[in-house]
Structure formats: C-alpha cells, structure tokens
Image (cartoon, rainbow, N blue to C red; front, side):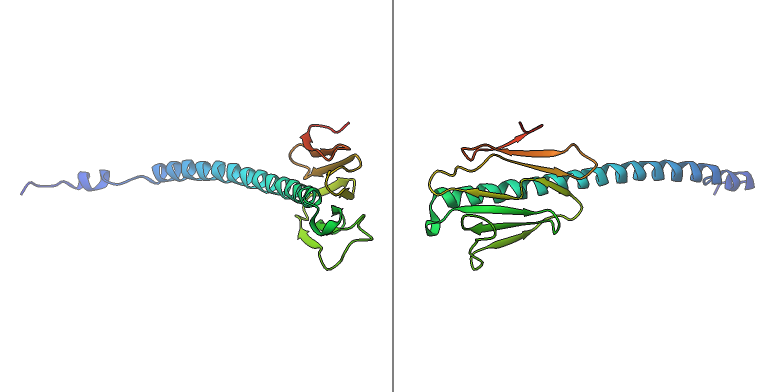
Length: 158
C-alpha cells in the first residue's frame, strides 16, 4: 500500500470560494427561471380571461341564432364585480332570472366598454359594441362587435 502524504489530504475537496461561486451561479439561474415563469403565468391568465369573454359572447350569439326558447340572448359585463352574466331576454334588466348563468371573472383585470350586449333571435344581430380588458402589464385586449353580430379581436375598435 502506497504511502499517502498529509499534503494529499489537504488538497482534496473544495475551497469555500469554489462552493460560493457554484452556489451563486445556481441562484442566478434559479432567479432567471422564476422571473420568466411568473411572466408566463401572468400571460396565460390574461389569455384565459380573453378566452372566457370571447366564449361567453359566442355562446350568447349561438343561442340567439338557434332561437333557444324563442328569445334573444345576451351577455352583461359587470365591471364592478368582474363577472359575466349570460342571459335570455331583450336586455339585462328584463332578463329571465331562472335561465341566467353567472361566470366569475378575474378581479385583477379592468373591464371596460359596452356592459350589455343582446343578440337578436335567428340573425344574431346587435348594436355596435366594444369591450376592453386591461391588466396594466400587457397590451389592452379589445373585442369589437359590429351590427351584424360579428365578434372580432382587434388592436382598437372603430
């Protein structure tokens, strides 16, 4: 068995400086990952809220065009409570309470524009309406609805 000198034992292992450098690099990589994942999370939540608004509008228009219960259908966008109400009737105050569906929105977003959008039976036509959604981080999301009931997403509404 070969003789091991004391010098060999002192040179094996890591110095405190090497450990600190490795830990610093690991912390930097983890912090970049956290920042990127949080931005991605916020973006996904914003897109989910956009999809919720669009799907509610499309459902109301489809039900009106299908003439379900022989009534117009609409969506009421309550910006104070951040909720969307899918209803049957000629307008929100005159809606049929037994058939309304209330959908909760995200309270972190600012909802603006036309609060009451009613689609007519069979044609799906409505008055011109604009809806905006803002979370103060990403660009504002606009939904434009023309008199024929077409629902479009644009940079700005006319």
